[in-house]
Image (cartoon, rainbow, N blue to C red; front, side):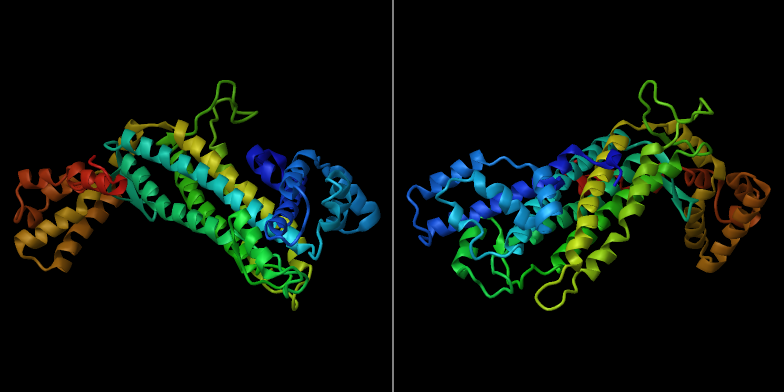
Length: 439
């Protein structure tokens, strides 16, 4: 992964050094559990555990070099590195009766996956806060609502943002559920038959504040499949927002633009350019992760108690989906927080369809007041509307000139229908519902 898309906060979870630090914490947790249960009799055992945590210095480069040149096994290299650094009294019990994935999986699930989701969730809440603030700011900024990219009826830009906020609530719940889902561990040995007593697993999981799960040598990768697919789903929601905003930056539309810092340039050739670079970066990184759930789904398959296919695949996918989901939410938050919004351009664009967006109310009023079958009223208004599109003429003028229309409606009634706010009768109620407060 290109380092420009990495965030320091996520590096603190997925760097090689962080991985080995989490492995060490897991090893110390198992020792602590065994000491607390009385399975290991060491004087001042818990104090020695704390001493070990202060003493051990992780050198990821040294561990990886030993693995590469000597052990050809990462956990063996890790143990070779940390064992000489811990108090002598603890060394006989380090990794005793444990297999590699009694270290890897608890660190992977309880620390790396869980902390990653917590970090993404924190930033997602910031995104929601920005959506709420800017929704209120533009609550009464009229904008054309579009269906199939075609003018439909009026909305407001604030309501658009508010609806994104409302949709974000379900993805916040997705992240909350995911934190609970990945908070698991196991210490059940080489094939899951417990070389250490099950009580040690329960106590270690209590200390880690996670659930213990039934496992073979590895924890079921269905949880990892949920992790990857849930993050991609959340990223897909943010990509949808980014893509809508990106379309609004087109010159012909220009309803919003990304903020450009002083000195920032959009093109080496054309000085006028202010391109939606952040929004396009979001779309590009979403493309980078959208296929990763397939790998995670395939990783659910393992031969009997364990094989290595999931391990090598996860090295190339899990950190990436974590980094890039965080990148997407941070980048989108910054865009919405600072973006330029052009209400005058929104009104200009709305006027391009010459009042055609009021066709629904005209049709329904003709049918109701004139007691005309709905399909006949629809056809009448449809014919006039299509003429306006083809001849680029004004909808109100053409309606007023139509004898069938004016036989039912007078000019005052007709004009009253061409009011954008009549299409937004429940704006306040919608804001109150979405934000759970009086607007």
